[in-house]
Length: 228
Image (cartoon, rainbow, N blue to C red; front, side):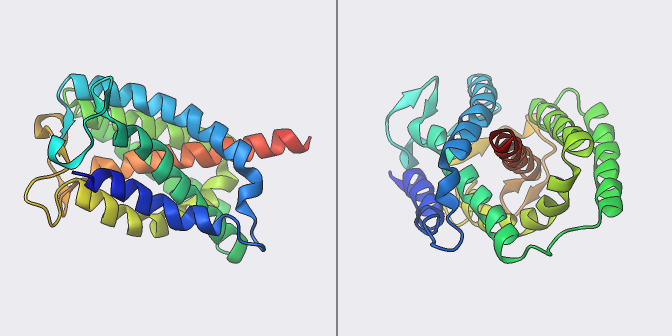
């Protein structure tokens, strides 16, 4: 009954506790981080509500509280704050403790351009699959923004995202049914490519990339604006 809630709490608890680390002091940026989370989550929650209403995905009531807002359980709303916060914390931990972990700018550009081209082809061939089309369109937009205005952020984020994928596969794997009789979140395969990594739709990786990079991009811009 409380599995989705427990996953949110577990994902947030350790990063939040270590945000007060005396060396890193990540918590000092809390206003900027919260503002970024609110702005990015607002976009994704609208998208989420529309997809939930249209049956692109849904939620198993056996695993969440009986509190619904716009058709989505309370835990789904919390997801867009708990998971991005934990992921952003991992990114900035890598920046702080491993400052030299950064890709060369030319390589970052090549990777980004290749991803945009590949995704454009997938989008063109899947205009009738709502999750694939919308998800990858958002991802192309995020990559294009990064390429034009935030290449230095992508240089670090490509590396940190590989680390973020470890807890991502654990949490999202459970949500999509790994180790469970039924998934916490179910997907309509008519609206995605039908390609699963274990139980996770491959589109979820793009979804995570856009959401987390969007937060990092805004945080960096807000930090720069506040220092001017």
